[in-house]
Amino acid sequence: MGNVSSGSNTAIKQKYSTRYVINSVITLFFMFGFGHLPAFSTLTPVGMKVLGVFIGVIWGYSTCEVIWPSLFGIIAFGISGYTTMGEAITSMMGHNTVFQVLMGFLSAGALTYYGFGKWFVSWSLSKSIFKGRPLLYTWCFFICFGYAAFIITQIQLQILLYVVWVDIALICGYKKNSPFIYAGLTGILFSTSLGSCLVPHQSWKFGLAKNWGALTGVPLNFGFMGVVDFILILVSVTLYVLSLKYVFKIDFEPMKQFDGSRLDMESQKMRPRVKRILAVYSLTVITVVLGNTFPSGTWLNTFVNTTMTGAGCFCACAAILLLLPSGENDGKPCIEFNAIKNSAISWQVIFMCAVTLPIATAVTSSDCGILEWITTLFAPVFAGKSSIFILLFTVVFGMLLTNVGSNIAFGSALIPIIAPFAVASGMNPHIVGAALIFTVNLGIVLPGASAPASIYHSNENIPDAKTRVKFTGFACLILLVVEVVTYSIINAVF
Image 1: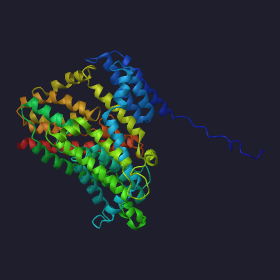
Image 2 (image 1 turned 30 degrees about the vertical axis):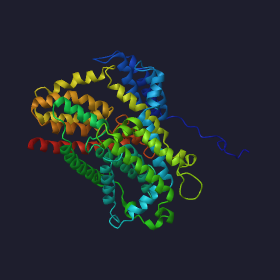
Image 3 (image 1 turned 90 degrees about the horizontal axis):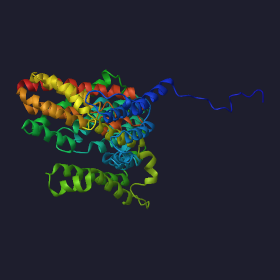
Image 4 (image 1 turned 180 degrees about the vertical axis):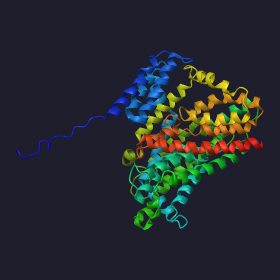
């Protein structure tokens, strides 16, 4: 017995790192202590508490993890005075976007579970045009699906593409948590976010366009914005792809050496079950798109946006697939819930979306006084300035704000601040309006900036917050430079 190591039957003791403890304390201080500090400027006492909860949640997500900051965030928001605990839980866990994401996970996750990702990788990478050209494949992937986000709901497309890209990485031999996966998932978020606002024809972006037209007296020209944004997306995504090789030094050699023959024969053929899931899923997407495209008041528009809502449509999609026979003569439905529930649904994403969206919206509520403080602080900056100053400030300031809080809220807040000065300067209102709406759509650096950002930052395949911010921040910088150059030229011409 004396020769047996004393530690052989003893578990290795581990402690939280000092950095983790400090960041945990900072997170909890902002959530529960910051609001008790004296309110400043136009902020109300309630506004101080909401702002503290918002900062605490973002800090916790960025430095610690997702689940416990979410739970403490729900508690802090519920006792902030802005809402009651019951209403906080209802607004968060019952949020329309949260439910839509959950339903999207069931369908998109099922496609991956049953082999769609491997089939897509085998089919696309085996094309002769892409053999030995990994950069071309990556560029086409981002560009095609980026423009597709103009038609397909971004959140659903985003969820599906993430799992496809991870399949691409693993099949090509990349390790989990590799820079290649960070680069790909960021590229998907970047391109689909831009593509979804090619023309603001639906959702909150359409509301921003209407508000801009009402305040300037000139309805935003969608055709003009579509042409300009098409160019912006093409140039920005191209520069991002090039930066992966020449700035981030991503190793594309494993993708270049991909050999489709290494995949099993099953991966090279789409299963009947997958065809049915894809058909129902695609039909749902088409229905939602047409509902948002048809004029307001038409039957389909009312049915999709009022009667069912997008979340309801994807709920119906999941329900049908849980009932529809698989087509593989196995006596089972297309989706077996018990089989996919652990791999298809990411609770980190659900909690992050649930908590950040209501709090980020509350930050710019009139009850908090934060918006008034921002208005008072920055509105004088525009007084007496030239049109080019207003345009450039709109792009830069809009990019900063939309990556701090809710892009919906700050987009709505900036319009009444900028529109009067744009008209007074005599500049073309179409230019600055298009620049503002397109810019505030790219909220991707922090998880509270938008629903797509929440989904991205909670993805378990990219756990390192610093690396996520490095890639997303660089993507935003690319768009900022491209916008400044492009809109400066357009402003000089028109």
